Image (tube, rainbow, N blue to C red):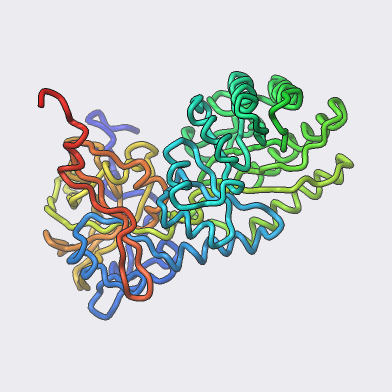
Length: 466
């Protein structure tokens, strides 16, 4: 029952969530939460890619996103190899820079972009445009024209207005645009409502149930400057259960067969989406790429046999599963405050030099994260703490609940794993804070991929009354 003074005063609130267990040693890392090269040395200093984070912060400052290049490439290869007969699309929206785009190309993956800005990064990186897919529910005329001129591999259309717009632009450019039709399969993914994307009541795609998807296919097929490649389905993000893919694949393949039968149009491709989950905390248990590939391939093979149709060429979009675990964020502790709660309990509030401007996901999605003391070893008893940022918001929380050493003090470094996806991409200048850099580490060396913002950057766009 909710306490009259609010949830934080309810009995047991200070104990944390039911899945969180008191660690035997708060210095230990939980391996599945961290990139593969992350470990602590004898002094308790967290090292990633052979670089101690104490050294990295001394050189580059904090907060900073630390990207384990070896881990990133290993995860990209794992999906490429497991889904060997698929096209695997890296999600640029998760995190994109010119260096990362080049890594994606070098590892043999394709690239999804969702805006002209993301396409600009791909262009600057020299990414092969025939391996680019262009997503988005409201692509502008300029963005579509840029995609057509670049010869992107596929434009995933999302509305009737866009079909008309793209067809006109392609004709004006004397080009043919390759198109996939995004459909909503009516599947409720077991994830946060803001990242579930295949149920009916949301902005993406054409409804199969309402008949819009079939009509969209008909219009694309009839447009002279558009080449219909296939259907695209995406049921959401941070998904662990393959049952949703099974239901979605059945419905999308049924539409695929209907298009062939009723319209006489053979679509050579199909995108099954993805959005595979990662481990943010010990409550998460993601499947490995080989298991996912086996399960999804069996689903498609079974449905194609049942429908008596040939299997289209398949593609997937792993989403955060490649870059998410490859990054941790390192912060410096500024203050530690003990806050008294009901029943004689207390909570340790650990304030760091970043917050919701570099990781909005906790506030936006109620996301859970873990963390560890990264700069030394501690023999203190673990206490339940909450890592918070420096913004003027009560909801400025980075890690809601985690056990940390009881002697945590100003000047210590704290690192949060699993911050590769959407943290830098969704970062802001709230309270006029400067966005942190992205530092790649590998083989004992570090290099800046995206530099730290400066106050000159911040003021450059403020041109009023000068």
